[in-house]
Image (cartoon, rainbow, N blue to C red; front, side):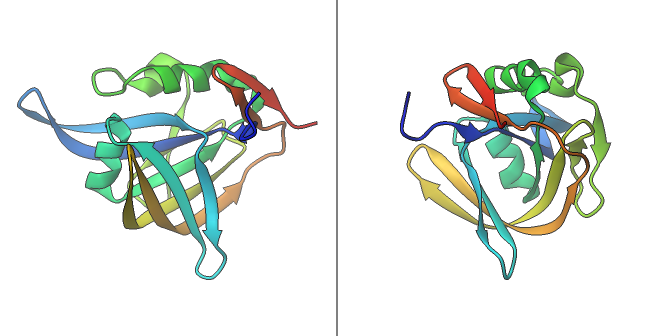
Amino acid sequence: MSIYNPRQVALVTSRAEVNLIGKSVLKDNIITVAWHMPVSFEPMLYAVSIGKTRFSCRLIKESKAFAVNFMPFELQKNALFCGTNSGEHIDKFEKSGLEKEECSSIDCPRIKDALAHIECEVINEIDAGDHIIFLAKVLKSEEKKEGKRLFQDEGRRFTTTQ
């Protein structure tokens, strides 16, 4: 077991118009992340670290917005699917069985079954080796229900809180 684990898993959702195979397409996507954190109370800022090669990195760079969805433990298979498949040529919402709803403060989907979510507007991008850290202002946060949260133990193993 790594000294860095367990880490809370979040599903980051994004939307942007991108060029795919010579055609402009509006794409919604989900990426599973464990590298995320609040970084300031005033103003309320949140950071997510996304691999440069990931499709979601491209969408967030284009749209300058994302939602962080805090997931219940029982949706670990859905989270694993979203973290091991690219959304460039598939609809991860459809294929994962996760239902989307619209964010209220940004043009972005969020996940209906999330325990909580935050809606974020990117204010800075920090090059961090093979990742980009997106620093964002939190425009809205909502805790929808209580439940056991999903944490990544290591690799494809998950755990939860007591």
